[in-house]
Image (cartoon, rainbow, N blue to C red; front, side, top):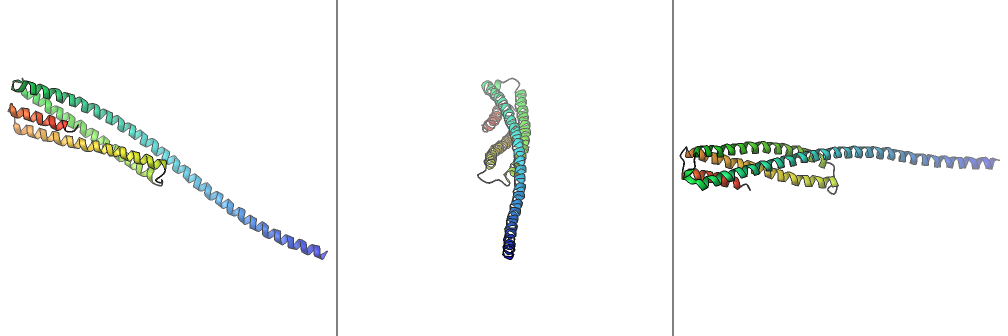
Amino acid sequence: MDDIITRWASDLSKYQKDFKHYANQVADWDLGLVDNGEKIQKLYLNTFEAEKASHEIERQLQAVESQQDELEEWLNRYETEVKEMFSKQMGQGETLAGPDQERERTYKLAEKLTQNLDEKSRDLSKMVKEINDISGTLSKGTKPEDPLSQIVRVLNGHLSQLQWIDTNAASLQAKVSAAQKANNNLGSQYGAPETDAAESFYRSYMGRR
């Protein structure tokens, strides 16, 4: 009987140690599950924020495309009007009736073009800043091989194109201002100098193309 009790006590001690070992192992697994659950929740939140940022970028790009289409429409319209006035003035030469009115129309058109370019440039600059901010937020925490990083690189290329438009719009504005200044220096005299001024403005405008 004593041997049986001793063996049971030994087995019970062994089973207690095994149970404690497995209990500690299960506790570690439980902690791992909790930690992984928190990581999954954080990843889900990051993914949700990235999706929101992607939708905002898409909305901004649609607005940029709309602005580009409108800008292109204005530029095409002004280019046609400038070509028509330039051809008319060069064809009629000094016999052009009402040179002062033609000159006034030309530079009013230039002023209107400058104003529209200023407005479009401000809009584009604002959109570029907003998209850069969103892209910077989106790019944080992403790896180079992530699809989101590739989207950011594509957007940065598109932003470079928008900045190029903005820079060339500013350059065109400077050319128009120079043409206006040259015209003011000519005064109200009409003849060969007037033709040169109109031609200078036209060439400055066409230099953008």
